[in-house]
Image (cartoon, rainbow, N blue to C red; front, top):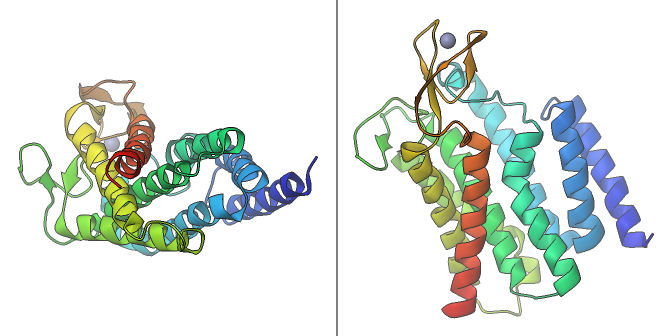
Length: 264
Ligand SMILES: [Zn+2]
């Protein structure tokens, strides 16, 4: 085993045990994070670890701050603020896969795809967390109808601004390793973040599964609510929030990578 892989294993153990005991992740979520962390640091190094770490730390802090203010919207979201394996893979799986491909193929432009994936995860998470706190009702991306806060596919000014800020933060977290490359790269990373979270909102407004609770009649992303199975209202059952988030990060990676390959 190489030293780098050993460092990766040790660091990933520390971070995932901390996440478990700080109740940021479920046991399954901590296990998935251990695997992801080992790939990122053990095979990629700090360059491929710091942006994901920045996403995880800042997003955890933002969810905690917002938690007290959005208890009413909390019931809508498919899962509570303690993230499970599905959420860890949905947000970090594409970035982990890109790191693996880079480890074996060594193509430098893959780093922009990686940053695009992390930017999309960050933009989507921040837009959801901050947008839910907005006092004005968000609009559905497809029909521009005003809907209640937290609805899948709903966009707001505050949420979009938070998404832009999140994408910019991800770019700056990788800037140490980008200093001698094309300076316009920031645009591509931010583009990846915004494109990915727009795909997320679009899928949320169209094909993502939405349910109605049989007990409290709330519209929800959860297939179970109030302890009972809820009724599928619209969308495709398999396209739950995790599947949509995975497509969001894949779109972020693909758009940033296409931009750097074909425009720059
Ligand atoms: Zn209910």
